[in-house]
Image 1 (cartoon, rainbow, N blue to C red):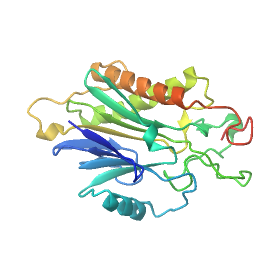
Image 2: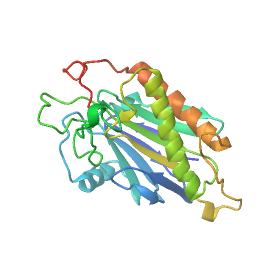
Image 3: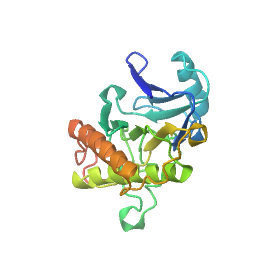
Length: 242
């Protein structure tokens, strides 16, 4: 099973991934369908401006003693505030920051909410010229580990389930958005090609494993949002939602 630790001084979360596991992730560094030996979630601070993300991730990974292929998530939220939940074998970890909630299609058809690759601007920072002052943390990063092999299709379904569960929490909490412009997710499970049993074919919201994934994500994001709720005008410009 995946092991987890918090590196306080390095401001990082690290997951050690067993040999023979597979991941599907949306991270800009080490994302896609991969066989990582580790996953990290790095606190970059609220003044992060670097765009050489692979080089930056390599520097931080070396400092953490991480070797081999891996996946790196970035956030301006304090990673020490990580939340965790487990539902019937599915484990979920989340760092939750919603200072800059975002709708997929911004109200009025504005395209100002379009997201660049994660980390190319500070975690949800508005790209338009109207934004002034220091940006605030605003990223929801999720790492989910399932104990059973999932087919590639089921991994994709799991990403959709995770996204829906996260969005449900935000809607239920009256947050004006379904996430932030820089959210990322990683799903981990044993590689079906190296398993003796058949892979699970489904992970949608009404499948057995999808239901468990959704419940774990919902509980984790809800805990993070309760601890650090969204407040209108938190960006310094009341009523403005990117």
